[in-house]
Amino acid sequence: MQLKPLARSLAVALSIVVIAGCSSTGGTQDGDSYGSQDGSGTGTSTSGAGTGGQYGSTSGSGAGAGQQADSRIPEVRTIHFDFDRDTIKSEYESVVMAHARYLRANPNSRVVLHGHTDERGTREYNMALGERRANAVQRFLNIQGVSPSQMSVVSYGEERPVASGQSESAYAQNRRVVFNY
Image 1 (cartoon, rainbow, N blue to C red):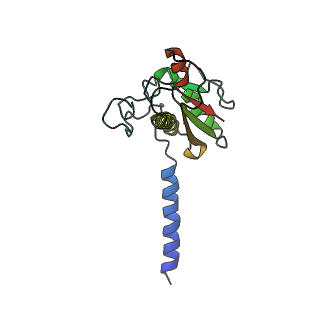
Image 2: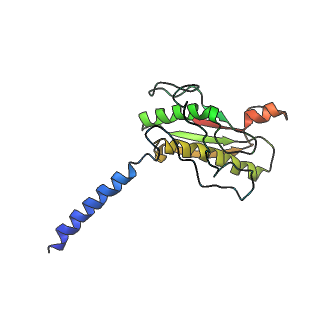
Image 3: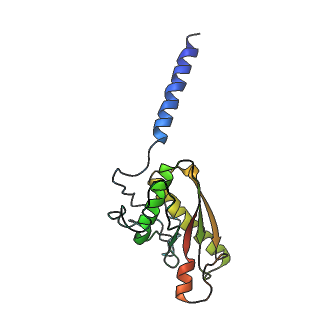
């Protein structure tokens, strides 16, 4: 009969430990992110995932494009990527940080990260690349303390271009992730 109160106490203690463990934000207090991520590449250099310093320098992440009050959705909702890459450019870190601040301050808000590519490559490859790009943004937001339940990822690959044509300018505009609230 003494076993039942002991089991109940143990279950309560275990629940508290699990909840405390889940409250970790995954980054450091000054906003630095971890340098290495799980790579999705196959040994070739077509994917930037898994390289050290994937997110670049975060020293200027408190200022720049996309900085808004925490109560408003940031104005800049699109970030662009280099050809055949899924790494967030350092020039867009402040934009993603602004979205992270907004999502942390508004835990009931949800965002869908839409990954896009240009038309080069097969349809299947571009769907996977669009997903890797959106997942890179999701990882960055998660490291900054955004709850995974606030984010979802959709890849459109090359299916929804914003610019038509076969110029480098059009391709660059189509390589993007869009924050959709």
